[in-house]
Length: 250
Image 1 (cartoon, rainbow, N blue to C red):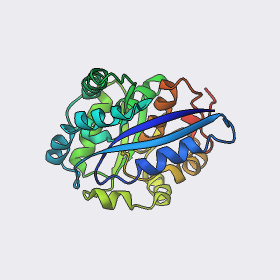
Image 2: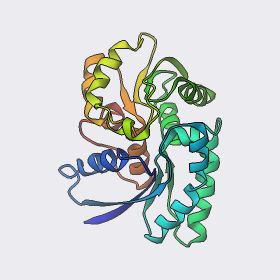
Image 3: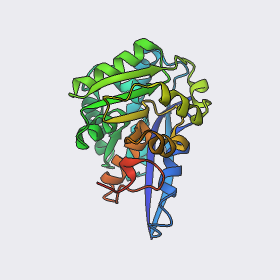
């Protein structure tokens, strides 16, 4: 049995990624019994999802990566999508390079995954050209997410902003409410639905249900992050009941 140490850099008020990432990876146990995962986190201070707090928080990511590298994690995930996307198109590449350098300097090289980079990279890998998205953000921040995605050549055909700025409140949203929100999305021209373009808004419980209901691929920022974590670890990117991306169908 091999043990993999999963490190996460998370906002201090984030409660979802430390729930959904382990849930997905541990759900693999029946199919992949020789795997074992442990989970380790470092926190960046942030309470409200505003551009000012997000930019201030991002500075702490280097410290968090350094701390996690002391634990010799096998992969590190920067688990805040909007903190990167609000910095401007392509910033995930800069962030990932910088954090990679930080852990290398600590003699603990490990792959770096960002939720922002994971989402746009996965959409491109699957060949999706048009997506509809749901975010918990205020509309101006949702627009920054749209701009970031569209800068990669993927059109956002429709979006819903739930406009919850308190990050703790975002983490307490009922994921099953996303079934109703998804019904309000115009998906007529979309290749796929990003049910939660935010790693703090819970969605895992609803992803397969929404996909079955709408008949189109459904994913989230958290699902995309797990997909990239598994690929970096050279493991099969398969998780049961987590939607098309982790179905193993492609």
